[in-house]
Image (cartoon, rainbow, N blue to C red; front, side, top):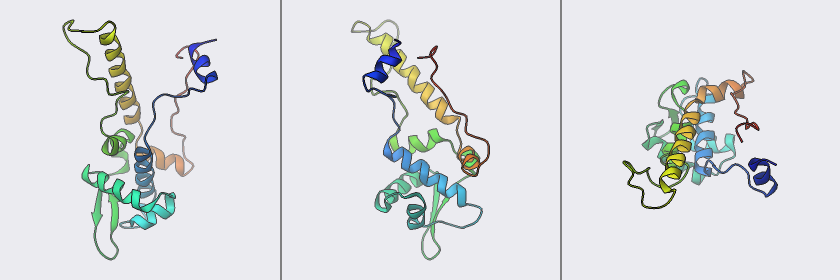
Length: 168
C-alpha cells in the first residue's frame, strides 16, 4: 500500500483546496467571459442567476476583483461588470490570488537562509512547503479564462493533471 492509498483509505483526500471565494470568483469571471461578445456590462443579478451564486456574496467578490483590476464596472441603467482585459490574459492564479491573497501551501514562513534553522527539520520542510506553493501558483497560472471558455463551449478539454503511482 502506497502512502497515497493509505491517505485515501483513511478518508484524506487532496490537501490543498481553493476557497469558496476563489471558486466563486472564477465562476463569475468565467460567466463574464462566456457572454462578453454578446452583451455589454453584466449586472450582478444576471451573473448570480447564470452561475447559481448568492448575490450578496457575489457583490463582495466582484468588488475584490475590481480592486485587483480584473473587472471594470459601469454604474446606472445598463451598468454592470466587464472583464478588464481579454480572457486569454487572465489566469486562474490571478483570480484566486485576488480574492484569497498569495497562493501558498501553508502559512509557515519563508525558509531560513545560511543555516539559521532554529528547530530540527524545520528548514527542510519550509523549503518543501515553499516549493509546493510555487508549483500550485505555476499550475494555476497555466490555465486562462479563455481555456475555460473553449472547454465550456465544447472545444478542447482543459489539460488535466493526474496523480500517478510514481508521483504519489
